[in-house]
Length: 259
Image (cartoon, rainbow, N blue to C red; front, top):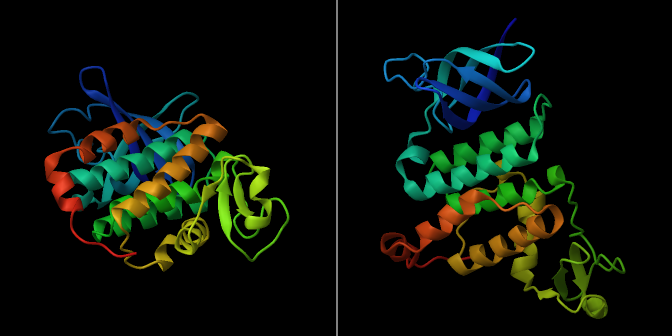
């Protein structure tokens, strides 16, 4: 049976001399894997449509095992994501996280919309690092993690000074700091950002400009949550860390930014 689906290529790996195995996150069927025969050949009609990050319509022949990708129709080749190395790296983090946290054949409209919104924003040259942070915070519930961010995780207070507790997986007010000796103190701006990253839909944010130090702090916070609660460490993080040590990127990061 042939099924036409809309989706994004979130993984594309070579198989044999001329084939690829592609993972598509689709609107209709969630995550599916299919064999793209001959896709490694430059002249193949599947060569362009099976590149990672590609957005398209895909015609997949279902089978008991792995399906086969018969043809595809390009919606977007996401040229900016491909052409800018930093953007490519953060888009890679987004698709790796979604791949790691989702199961096959389980559609989730929210995840598809998040992937679509994040790639649209990156294509419009919004801050790719900030966009990847939105995705990481918004994917926490998919990983089974539900941080308490609207009140104190211990007493329920909604006013006062707050810190973040990895032990409580959420905020602690100043009256409850003693509950966790390893709290991370937070400024009002950091509290606002955490709540925004977690709660506000990406398409409602607009162009957000953040200091590099702010993004680094937010990344360490969310990475630690994932590692302590799920054991997940993304390979793409290692590449990003190597990339950030390159002189060219360090020079770009010296440009003044505002929170």
